[in-house]
Image (cartoon, rainbow over the protein chains, first blue to last red):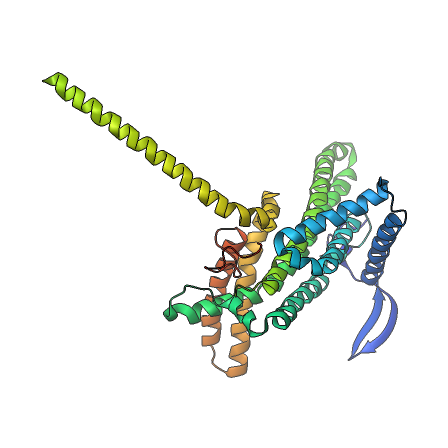
Amino acid sequence: MQLDPIHQFEIKNFVPLFNLGGHQISFTNSALYMFIIVGLTSVLLIGATTRRAVVPGRLQSIAEMCYEFVANTVRSSAGTEGMRFFPFVFTLFMFVLLANLIGLIPYSFTVTSQLIITVTLALLVFFIVVGYGFWKNGLHFFNLFVPKGVPKLILPAIVAIEVLSFLSRPVSHSVRLFANMLAGHITLQVFAGFVIMMGSAGILGLFGATLPFIMVVLLFALELLVAFLQAYVFAILTCIYLNDAIHPGH
Amino acid sequence: MSDARENGDWGKQQTSEAALSARLQRLNEGLGQARDAAGHPSESSGAQRAATASGYAKGFRLSSELVAGVVVGAGIGWLLDRWLGVSPWGLIVFLLLGFAAGVLNVMRSAGLIAGPALGEGNRQGPDR
């Protein structure tokens, strides 16, 4: 077992593929885990919905619960018009949720603890919001940045602040997920490292090692909650941002 | 004489009590209306529910909102300085604006003020 808490986030190149603008593009452990996530999601959902029983079995219940959970989230924060984005939000939610949960398995790799992954997802949401907002509302989309009932004198400053607030969304959207996963996994690894270090220090250390071991168990429960919560927060923020594109306060 | 005064006092007390209860009732009605008005958006804005799900998540959420605003403001200011050569004014102005945007983000995600799509006049907008 590695004592270095950062070691678990190391990217390993498995198969070098090709060069793109001087950058080596390879099949990495990150890519492998993403394939696993997508494969697992597909197998779970397709396998669960083939039987289509009126009284759902275990797998079908899981799939239906996921569907209803995300559908309620989308409906409540983006309205029924937001349901056209349901496949997108559902995909994002399942991807992030499975990435977080699979990352909790010891010796596995957490895809969402890589900033580049979460930034890509957040920018995807951001550009979909901007693109759909302009496509649907045209220049009315700019009304998002002009709050009503503001004196003309301070309007330029308010608009600048609103624009900055809008631009800062992908940053907070991505950093929240990334930092939560990174911090959680480093904490787990550090406490697990304590167990090993104290355990190898004789019989007295073995007794002392129970304390960090209890911490690891408790932290693992917390991480399980965080894994689910962050997937939910990521999905709901996506819905809220999409809501701005659908109804930009015209 | 003192009896009369007492009577008068008692009468006054009674009227003030009646006025008080009437006022309380009015306040209650107003509160109910305000709750009804506020109930729908807060009920539907699931972000608030997500934030209250765990204090840890809430703290993290708010701090990341503030930091994001400041970082984006500083980044834009720095880029403007480099491109337009107006150093250090771009950084100064946009860092301050970014800080304001960060505070705005925090207040919005804490549910203290309405989101940008909920301007005055479209409060009865379809959802949110």
